Each structure stands twice: as structure tokens, then as C-alpha cells.
Length: 266
Image (cartoon, rainbow, N blue to C red):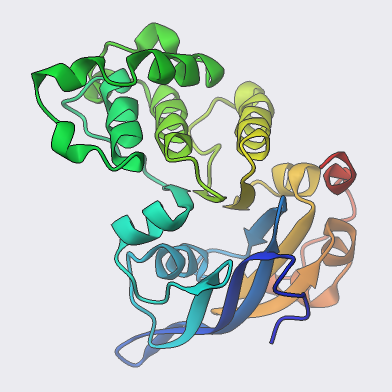
């Protein structure tokens, strides 16, 4: 069970389990994301991070356990309902409508968030366009606004997908390897944009990331999975020095990783 008060929690995951036949991909996972948290989920390849994200956001139904958003049990609900209840999501591979322009994708998200899908018609092209353009400016992709998403470079797709996720006004933003595909010199700046926009909008953040330098620089708290189980949880400093985490990463030495106290900034 989680030790935090429900008043502090935006997301509570309890005994979350997922079986694929005889293979248990997620095994009794417990953790809590706090309001205004920036929390990272890490672990070696195959640890169950993406499966855990998919269980939270409804892409998969759990075999056991539950997921609570604020005070509402959302376990097993379909993704569109979970999105409307306040969880935004970006994926390892950006999920956008390739034939629609960048700004149309963001407009569609805004129309959906306001429950105005019945307004979809030729006049929908004008709905929220200025708001969508303003959001695209925040993520530094305004110059691609009227291009079909299928024509975007991968890094620009990442930026556009972030705008779509934020357009729903989430209370919790899940990002699955958000900086993947962003050129190395731009990754930290992109992550700064992600966190700034999410926190400014009142959303907590849960992200997974293979680049541990990024994790230990940006996360206020870290949860570590290995073979589908939580093996450690705590501050970046506590996790960096935990022997169980080193064992999960085959004895890797994390002493060179610099920890930044972003929790204090939040």
C-alpha cells in the first residue's frame, strides 16, 4: 500500500498486475504520484514501464489491482474516458493523425476536451485555431502548423504530440520516453519545455526515460521497476545509491550521475 495521504495524491496505483498468458509483465506494482510531482519511472529494457503506462491509461486492462485518479477508480476504463478524466499521454512512437495538419490535430484535441465533437463540420477549421497556434508556439513548432503531420521530422512530431496532450488540460501528464528522437543537444531544453508547460497548467508529470542523466536532472522522485516489480522508490539521490537499483542495471555504477533538486523548484 502507498504511504501518502489521498489528499496529496493525483494518481494511486495499487497491486497493479498484468499477465500475458503465463508471462507476468507487471507484478503487484504500487506507487503514488503526488500533486505537482515530477516523477520518473525507470528500469532496464523489459522491466514493464510501457506496460504499466498502458494499464494506467486504458490501452490494456489489468489482471489485478487498481488505478485511482484523485478519488476516482479508473481501473480498466477505455482510454477516451481516462483522457477526459484528466490523464494526458505521449507515446514512445508519436500517435497523431498523419493526414491532418499539426494545428488541426491540436484543434481536434481542444474540441474533444470541450465536448464539442458534434460541432465537427467545415466550420470546425476555425474552432480554437488561435488557441492551438498559441500552444504550438509554446512547444516551438508554429512554423509547421499547416503541414500534415505525416511530413514532419521525428523531433517535430514529438513537439506536436506534446501540444496535443496538453490541449486536453490534463491533471496528470504521462510521457513515455519524451525526448527520444530529439537531437542530443536539444533534449534538455525540450524536457524543460515539457515540464514548464505541464506544471504551469497544474499537471503532475510521470515520465519514463532511458537517459539516466535526464532522469536524475529533472525528476523530483523516481520509481524503479525490474522484471515487472517495484524494486526502489524515493528521491533521485536515494535511488542512485540503492544497491537494488544497481543490481537491476547489472551492477552499473551511477556515482557519476548528477542530481538536481528540481523538487525544490516545483
